[in-house]
Image (tube, rainbow, N blue to C red; front, top):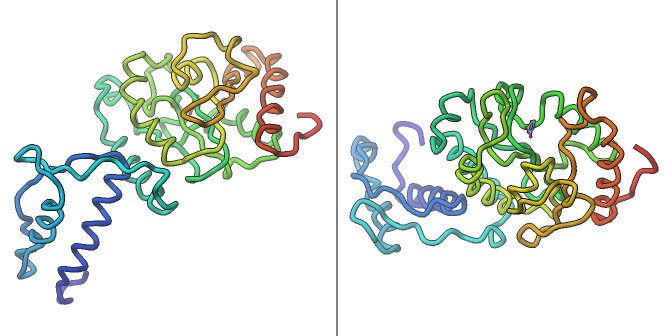
Length: 273
Ligand code: URA
């Protein structure tokens, strides 16, 4: 709305409603009640009635908060609402300070990359130095290898969603601590609920054990499908483990896992990697 345009309360109410719905879809359940905004006053009217009417639709449990109704199940949301909710969730993650240590050492959070509604989502462990610098998952050496795995499967990185168990880089690339994984769990769950991938592939022990809430070894978990909230989930070695200085011979097993995944997805299985 530019200066001088008539101030339309219905427009404001619509925008507020849309904003609240995005917040609700992203899992935000409470908003501060706050004071009427001076913005409305400077325009010669107040948006307080719009906010108040919205607040009046919901029970007030505490004087300073109003509930914005239970989180909608993402399966009830349109693709566009899920996109908006994911953007809101991304912003929530950017502001997260739950792990004080990680928040103080990160350059930025690394939420994930890809589109809602993709068929396949890869879940890794945590951002490394390159990811922390660029704000995107799997863009370093392990990421280059993951790109090759994706290409060998006859897919493009753009058709896949990629994220991690935790959204901040652990200093020195150490494995995320149980508390860090647990602090980030709600974000990951909501992220996957909004993306709604048809299949998930967990990369490495940290991703597999946290995602599937198990203490089993990777050797016991790989080679078969697991269930993550109704989504078939495959487990395989982390691409960093396949790098030349570690265990490149494990690429063969990763390829076996990928072939099993492709077959279950109903996609053609390339003859060889
Ligand atoms: N390793 C991971 O687990 N995730 C990344 O994003 C990069 C490296």
